[in-house]
Length: 391
Image (cartoon, rainbow, N blue to C red; front, top):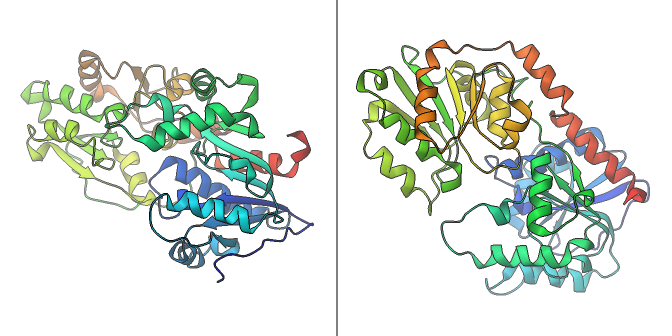
């Protein structure tokens, strides 16, 4: 495969491109999953109308696509090689621009709000970006990361160069508008899909069904707030604690894992099970058998785990003020509480025995009615690609 290929637009199709490094091999990431699901949908259902281009930085990334049954149907564009690792990807980006001034994609769709300076010089007619929400600014970081601040600065200066900006929720629209100073009317709402577990068969994994199983989903970072649930658990009476089993699902973050690990170090290992990541069929089994699923994150653009568990009929608990609270509060067996309040979490634990599963037909209808399936979401994005005169 050539390192640098001039891409000719098929006039019978709308040519759409993504920078695929953001979602190749990152199935655990919600933002990565959104981009991948969208690309897969286009390849499987819009192949005659939309040309899918995946831009990668290396032959290794190109080979990952080549060996993927669905993604291999796309056109792969490898950015030109450069010497050295300093600002490597940005230098590849600009070198491609210099070498391909006449090449044109109809749309370049950035899957996250991390844009290079003068991104609009890239050979495309339109530029779309899915921000999800304002987390690049609002979510606290464990250390100062220069690139994050540069990306945010670029967006504040250059958002007008984007033809479409997408958010995952009404909360996300407001957060983007407030933190990037972008008018709400300039931001389009397309939710995330919560139905990817519906049609797969659960795979049984080890689970002590003699206990009350509490599934806590979230990476080990401050704002994901897993530690608050564990601290509340440790404050329960011993006789009550012994009836529970905590199942933690989420990667330990290298910078932020200490805040969770400190609590785990005080816990008997018989009280908990750790999973860095579970494939969908095993995750579904947990959701189907947990007595309560807690998504304690205090800052989310959408909060996909809450909606996944909701669609599997599990009792769920979420933080007040999040998108999951906005959409799901008031539904049966959904408990929205202040996840920073230890007493509120302890009260929640004490209610678990009275909780029960909810009919999935009712819940899935709710999600469909709110356009929260991948087919609905990808169809919405497709409409924007196929109607570029609206931009």
